[in-house]
Structure formats: C-alpha cells, structure tokens
Amino acid sequence: MEKQEAVNKADTTVSQSEGNIHKTILSGITPSGRLHIGNYFGAMQQHIDLQDQGDAYFFIANYHAMTSRHDGVLMHRHTLDIALDYLALGLDYNTCTFFAQSDVPQVTELSWILGSLCPMGLMEKAVSYKDKISHGLSANVGLFTYPILQAADILIYHADIVPVGADQKQHIEITRDLAVKLNIAYNQNLLRLPEARILEAVATVPGIDGRKMSKSYQNTIGIFDEGKELKKRVMAIETDSTPLESPKDPEKCNVFALIKLFASASDRSYIATKYREGGFGYGHAKKALLEMIDERFSPARDRRKVLANNEDEVHRILALGGEKARDRAEQVMNPIRKATGLVRHF
Image (cartoon, rainbow, N blue to C red; front, side):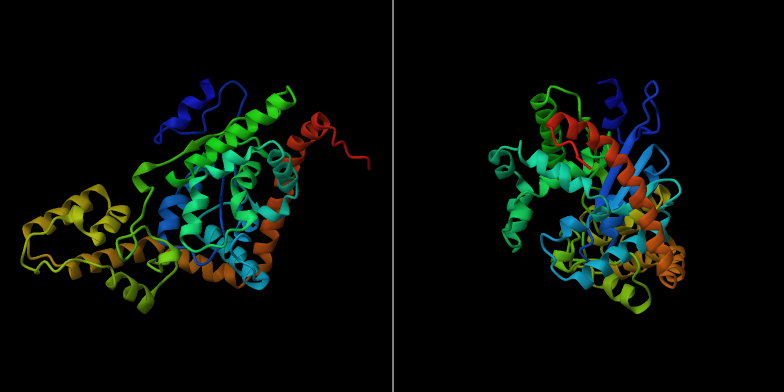
C-alpha cells in the first residue's frame, strides 16, 4: 500500500499525506508505576516527537493495567502521575488527543466483537502472555486476551501508525489479523490495517544491572529522580573491575550504553576515546552521565512540580481528550454496529 511506505523508515516524517488522507498515529502507556528513562527513550520521546506529525492519539492504558493491578486508589494515582509526566515532558494536549483509555467505552465494545472472531490459537501464540506468566503475573483471562483489547485500542481510531517497542510487533500483527477477519466476516472495509513504527536503536534501554530497564527488575532510573536519589541510582550502575588507569571498551560498559542515549555524537566520540585511552574511570563516566540526566530532565522536573499543584487542570485536560477520542471512536463504531446488526434502539 502506498500510504505504508513512510511507516517502514524510522527517519521518515509521518506527517506526509497521500491524497487527502491524513495519517493517524496512536500509542498508549500502561499506568503500572513510576516511569523511568527506559520508558522515555523507548516510547515517550517518540510520542512527543510525533505529536504534530499527524492526527495523534496518545492514551493511558488503565484497562490494561487491571490485568495485574487491583488497587483503585493506586490506579487513579498512577494514571494521574503519567499524565503529569507527559505534560511536563512536552506533550501538548492542544496538538494531540491525550486521554485515559477508560474514558472511551467504545473500545470495550469493539474488543468483544473482535474477540468473538478471534481463534483461540491466535491468542495461544502470543509471546508476551507466556513471558509475563514466566515473570510471576497471574494467569488471568484479561492477561490472556490482552492483545484483543490492544487491537481494539488501535482500530477504534482508524490508526495508521502505531509507535511501539520491538516486543509489541507481534501484537500489531494480531491487530491486523483481527481487522481483516472483521472486514471479511461482514464483507465491508470497516477497519484500517495499521503499521508498527519501531526505532530499533532505542528498543532496549539497559538498567543499572545491565538487563533491560524494567520496574519488574527494580533496576530503573526515574525520569524525575533528582538530588541524592538520582545520584544513588546512577552510582549503583554495575561495572567490571578494570582498574582506573587501564583502557576500557566503552561498548561493553553499562554506563556508556546509557551515555549514548543522552550525549551528542561529538560527546559520545570524545567519551569513548577517553575510555580507550585509560585513566578514565567508571566513576568519571557516571559523573558525566549524572550531569547529562540533570541537563535533559531538570526543566521538565520544574514544570511537573507546577502541574502537580493544580491537579484539577490535569483532570480537565484528560476529560477534554476523552471527549475528542469518544467522538472519533463513535464514528468508527457506527458502521460496525450496522454491519453486525447491533444497531442501538434508543
């Protein structure tokens, strides 16, 4: 398809239009706790960069969080915290549609319809379900059918482009399969086929122990950590025992892997040279990283503190986004209701 050509190139601007079609961009993030720099480089930075490059929808996936979180007070807090984080980092609710998943009931309506067409075998092949179970999550039905709800999230807005991590690629394929099944079942083009947009260079951000940065591993550095807490996390990054005076391979160092995310090309080259020359210790590298993190996120920290003192405004922003998202979802659902015979009688 012609309109998919730009999607497969990470460096291509997605704001281009084919004919009169304006691309719709959609992605979500689950409110499962404090966000960290892995979330930022893996997803949030993409979202903020893409917000003015199409008709952008970004949502807080609180329905999805229910597969592993059953504390209503904490759910509300985490949802609000993610809203604060995004707004502080530069997401503009006037430019994109920013909302909570639960403010769009049409998504669960479409999820049921798609689930009624989804073969069990398609869900049984989902790698993420097996991975989450292996990490100790409860094997509940919501977790098993997670990809169906995710498909509804995407399809309900006629999304063209879905920025996701590499581990979500299979779910986009499932989404496309379900859209095709609905279109074929009712012999109508009711749903568009979305494309994943994956930036391989930042697909995996290392944590302080060298594994993928994840709340599950407790190896994170928070986006809004500062002062002693931030220094404690950075200084805890695991390194080998190579002496200060000895040359080091920067490409085998957890600290340098994080430096590469923050530093300019010239700074990366300079620091890599210092590693290889010797006399540059891991303590020096950690100090440089600490300064880079502060420089990148200090303005956002200040904005977040201001927003946190006016949470009513954050609620208003989410409500406004929810209204816009419902309007779009209703436009997509009406033809589906007619095709399936689920016409409302009120």
